Length: 482
Image (cartoon, rainbow, N blue to C red; front, side, top):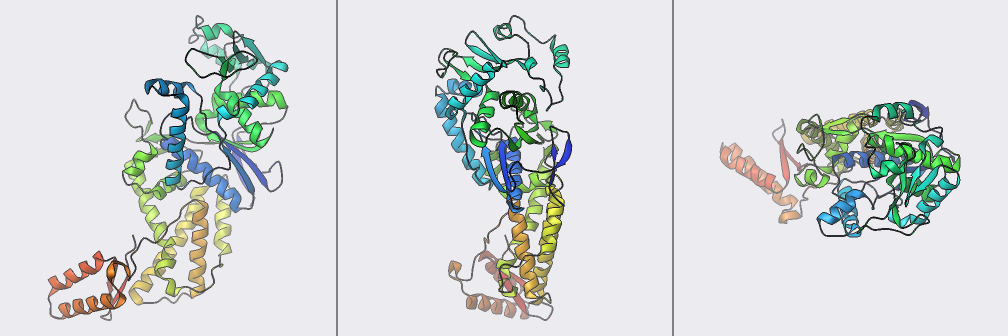
């Protein structure tokens, strides 16, 4: 089965065909850097990180660009509140972004263009729009004439006449910006400089760009006229992505993107996340309270990426329990390496094919997780047999194959685990010393001194090892699986 994805633009699922065979140009509308990233950012960044990873897994050469909006009213407001500057605020929260994403195991994009570093491209695009009759100046501002672009509304499905009828009671005709516009839904490409705000020289006077033109310029500068995938949150469909299309396609006469992908929003306990409701959760708040980053990734991947998800204590607990299952499977080879074969490149193509068949259906990561859980649970069963019986009847090469396959598939979703167990040489305890303690415990049990037997078991446990008493009267030990 070939990859097919739901295209917001066509409102249907389509076979994925790239502009250039074997290569993917992908752009994700990134964050406005005025605050710490929250759960909504976590979901979006995880989803598009995994989409990029899966495309690479099935053989594509992916160029992945993610922008930073580093000039914006919210950034300027934060700078005024802190008696700081736009640059200082942006730099601080860009650094915080990278810290948070690193904790979530999100791989860096190939490039992170910034609006303030793309000023030449922004002004060039505005000039081209003005030259082609899609933009007009007005007292230092420049506006996009939406009525001149025949395709306006094609992404969101909105019609200008319906929007105008619905907005008739909400428009403030006394507003200075409204009075500059030729049509109520024209939007700013360039904003005239205001006192005490950063500004750049331009053919229309000193000022700064509007939000929408920034992304159009960054896409064009970094990836060209037409890209394969333009991604972002569903809240960006209108007006941001709609306006990007209008700006870019009016200049180039080509599709800005062949596939528009949007992730669903995040709710908290059934309500929209907002500071006013007191349910606004940042990534670092969540992780600092002890939630495993891998559980957060799993929480995001369990849901279909286009659907809303509800963050609740029960949901994150379920994801944490699910992660413990996958983690135990991933650690199988570390704890039972004596049971594995020596070949390290064994992969089960039947599991790989099942995984691809699921995920190729519009990035169905929940379906892919079903395969991962199946493998993990099979390895856990084998591990329990080994612990209780000392060995398993399953051939070593088959165990190796399942383990390597699980590691490979989990890695596509960014789910990774390293052993956190103590070895017999740590804390100054050796194999012989553990065996001696086990012998002392057995003698205590024979003497029916169960308090001493339990004390020795607890001592061994504290050193990082678990004991399994077998039916034959012996005792097996192994490192504790965290």
